[in-house]
Image 1 (cartoon, rainbow, N blue to C red):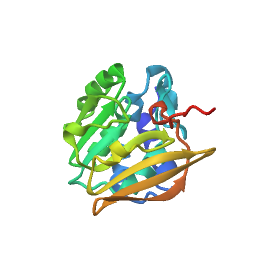
Image 2: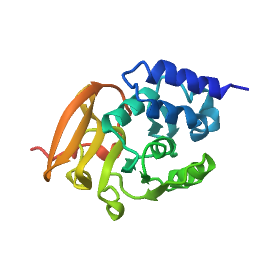
Image 3: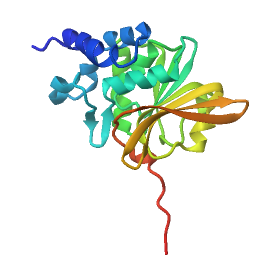
Image 4: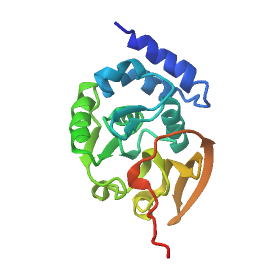
Length: 217
């Protein structure tokens, strides 16, 4: 039987700690959450690999390194309310819940909502809930948020999602521009949104965040 605890320690030591994520809060959160329980049984041997893991067709858990660096970029505080967009089976929610006051996981897939809603309490999470809705639209009912994390690459970040940030709120996402994918941090300050790029990485593209293709004569 695989020793998932040892794999989890190795993941944090080799993929997280050495990748400019020195924050012990993030490291400890990822040590505590059993990532293998959030992937299909047939893929558990790949749960801790240095790659994204497909949970259902076209939907993935982010590579551990990428998730850790995005959370570091978001500077999640223990008093923050977080919106986790595209939370799939709930792994990212479980990690974020150990860092924040409250987490809302947003999923468009009804089966993933069910799976995530069952898994979070099963791993001891009591401060997160999963809601169903369009990923681009966010979850206005609980806005504004101190942090919004998008769990996949996007070609654009919709203004409607940025509008759900509180003053001083941060949105982090892997933005794809041509062949390059780079992490960006968006911050609301005095009612305006500023952004900056941070690190290059890899993440599967979320179909909901493709740029609309206009008709050209």
